[in-house]
Length: 360
Ligand SMILES: CC(C)(COP(=O)(O)OP(=O)(O)OC[C@H]1O[C@@H](n2cnc3c(N)ncnc32)[C@H](O)[C@@H]1OP(=O)(O)O)[C@@H](O)C(=O)NCCC(=O)NCCSC(=O)C[C@](C)(O)C(=O)O
Ligand SMILES: [Mg+2]
Image (cartoon, helix red, strand yellow):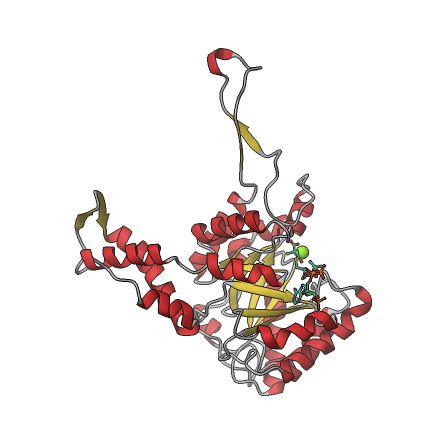
């Protein structure tokens, strides 16, 4: 028999490693803010960002120059050790890292350095360019061995980036490959290259990807409006389904046009509406966008609470403002109400906003 039995997933993969979690904690992670730990200007800003962003991620992979790989790894260790309130499964801001890809010469040293030095601070390890469940199994076992050796008491979770066509084809198996799986992010730049899409951007749309309205009266040369379409709809929807099936969390990834805060907000909101819990921030100004977009608005919560109140024991159908509400619309409203409760626990401004909402 080659497959594991369900109970095998409850046992650690190394003697003395912490027991796997049975559920991934629902910790708010609206923005995963990337910084290069070898860049002194970015590092200077990290202490003051704690408490203003849900996740700070020390990036070791792409966007860190090959000559700086060692400095980035060592910089991350220092930051984790010296920054109050960062990481450790309970601080206001989680600490994640993105390790180098599994086919790189750096990744083994990334893990064997980080886990003993700062394993008690690291909440999640993001693994790039994941192709299938075997990649997760490799990291899973290695983490267990290193956790056992370091005497850690909580398992470090794994987040996979979807940035290859094969990874997309195997997305469900990747989600179910280990109880450590915390979530997935879309990696639109590498994924576009791997799929041989003809785009040149890091996320976002493309003006050439459109539909055109039918000709009026058969005049194909006449004025006809066009509508830009979402290049990422299929991919994000597939990722959301895979994550929901496995009880883990989906995230939109990076939006590379830092100056275009309007289109960034649109992309983030589409992801929020489709089921994602957060997005990446590459520049400090994207944190505020993600925090705003991935927090339900006061209007959303007012409406959701009205439906909850109107639905009584949660069964049957009622009319509210001319619309039918029933068990299923109530469940959607509860998604928003529960998210507001989670956010209220970590964000005093949002707590005040949500507490002040009056339901008539
Ligand atoms: C875009 C860049 C070059 C603009 O950097 P800049 O210096 O030109 O920007 P700026 O507006 O001049 O910066 C203002 C200040 O903020 C600082 N700063 C700027 N950014 C940050 C930051 N992130 N964290 C903390 N501080 C930051 C910066 O150092 C500067 O400090 P100063 O006022 O003291 O001079 C820069 O923001 C950057 O390098 N960001 C991170 C990029 C990154 O991590 N890329 C990898 C993720 S995307 C990806 O990998 C793809 C994917 C998923 O794999 C796939 O789709 O395949
Ligand atoms: Mg990439």
